[in-house]
Amino acid sequence: MDIERKIELICRPPTEEVLTPTGLREILEVEDHPIAYNGWEPSGLVHLGTGVVCAYKMKDFAEAGLRFKAFLATWHAWLNNKLSGDLILIRKAAELFRHSWIALGVSVDKIQFIYSDEEYNDLSYWAKTVKIAKNLTIARTTRTLEIAGRKETEARYVSDFLYTPMQVADIFHMNVRICQLGMDQRKANVVAREIGEKIGKYKPICIHHHLLQGLEKPKIWPIPKDQRKEALSSAKMSKSKPETCIYIYDSPKEIQKKINRAFCPERIIEFNPVIDICKHIIFREKEVFIINRPQKFGGSLEFNDFSELKKSYIQGKLHPQDLKSAVATCLTDILEPVRKYFSVNKDAKDCLKIIKNAKITR
Image (tube, rainbow, N blue to C red):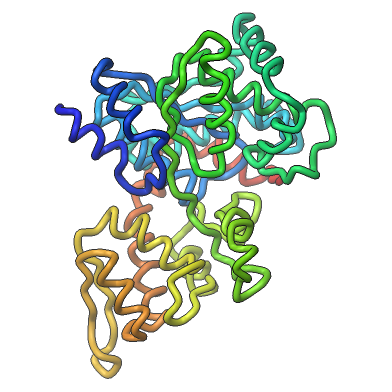
């Protein structure tokens, strides 16, 4: 595969940022199969963002010929007190994550699943962590707390400040050349770029993907201009808020119910979670998106790309309820393989049952 096609796949939406395009090209010119990774706190059920969107990028990177490592950061979830700090439950959640991506079509032959429990038995990992910590000030580390889903003022324990140096150490310990994570992990990746050469390593390339929005209405609407950045960060889909997200295991009835209740302001595209799903999932899956409507309401609509849908919605030619019905139907079809996988795979079914019964903590 030529470099142009590799770059096209790596930068394919939902990718939103590349640090840097020049650096990406340079590494692909010297390495045929560089190592890339994404990392997750296995801390609950898998929703559309963690599941579907992340699976898209895993598939893109695998198709581009990169060696992709899916890092299940059990210790980070433990540090962050997810699942009430129960490491046994966290490990079970890690298995649920793995099953979830397999159910979404991620190939176990092309993706390597790695657990932090295994990596952290190596003393050299902790040497890297300490070396990174020695190059980070308290102030700089505090500014990165967003990667753990925390505000800067929420640090309470010394362990809160271990999170960033450990995450950066993960990158160099696994010889990752390309970090492929969500936009919420950007600050840790930037630290890796700043520190890499100082500790005798390298400057990794960072590919950040879009964070799917949660289904709820923002607390302040319309959003003031000076609060837009913070609002967008807090609006991401979260597994700790079941009513604001769609889990990939949800039944057709649950999907319909959640989408029907979703915030979807008429004629407004920005901060509209239903439109967000259309842009980043529906049009990734469908060449033609069909919205069925009775003839008395104008008949069915067909859209060949997102720009057509966006234009029609802004002009008021597409009602939110008609859009919601079509999105719910489409998501039901997209997630059918997941429901089937979890109905026949006993280990997956057991993992799902255990985590569904667990208390999900923020």
